[in-house]
Length: 67
Image (cartoon, rainbow, N blue to C red; front, side, top):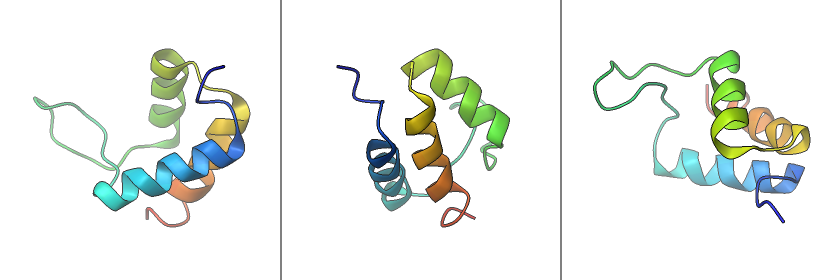
């Protein structure tokens, strides 16, 4: 089973990401900027193949605690 499927997994992963530092978009050659909703959704869908439930959990934390 894909580990990026449940709402709880999304919440847990976002909290872990925030503990490591601020959420930033861009790679090592780009200027780090806060990620937009569209950036997170497109990156997670294309690279992780995550579910809508996972995204909802991740985004609920990212846009409440991460700002």
